[in-house]
Image (tube, rainbow over all chains, first blue to last red; front, side):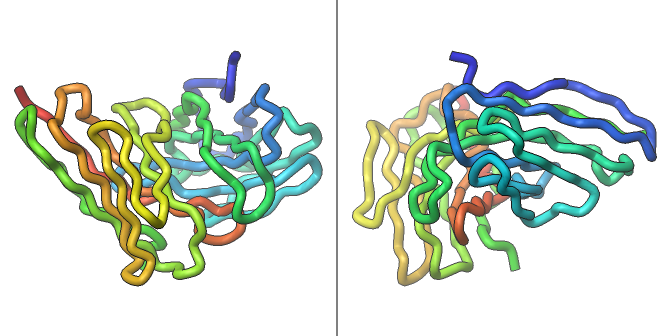
Amino acid sequence: NAGVTQTPKFQVLKTGQSMTLQCAQDMNHEYMSWYRQDPGMGLRLIHYSVGAGITDQGEVPNGYNVSRSTTEDFPLRLLSAAPSQTSVYFCASSYSGQALQVGELFFGEGSRLTVL
Amino acid sequence: RKEVEQDPGPFNVPEGATVAFNCTYSNSASQSFFWYRQDCRKEPKLLMSVYSSGNEDGRFTAQLNRASQYISLLIRDSKLSDSATYLCVVNGNFNKFYFGSGTKLNVKP
């Protein structure tokens, strides 16, 4: 059982380049989300989705786009990378998209991004 | 103000010690609460959910005080393997999870 799979695990970009971080889950979870983790800041929510075709912004959405065309996949796009986007990115899914019932978050192993 | 605030640590304790972590949250409408554990350079993993009545899982006890908007985690008989960062997590507003910045625990022989 693969759980939540993120690719790539490491990436170095130059300022202004674009890229997509991939996230896939095989648990049939409705809820998927992206976080970034910076030293001393904890995890901050970028975007989330409660089901295919539905996405919404989190705390720090600027500079990122998402889409959810299938239940399994939730890619995160960096439109024009900036050094401030250097971070560790985690994708997480959960088994319910309904308010009050979203439970345990299952995380991918993370993607370490450096923007020069 | 941050949605979730935690003691930053680090907490340095000997094996066998009892250690307690605290966390406060700002949104009184928050519905669910969790403690996650994160090992160095790894993904967070669920340690335990926190229920209004308090709950225990082996050496770990979690408490929730809704009136004070306060969550705690107690670890008894600390093991070397408990060394990690402990994250307080609150589901504050319709599927938005808010994470504290974490409390680092170092258990020493």
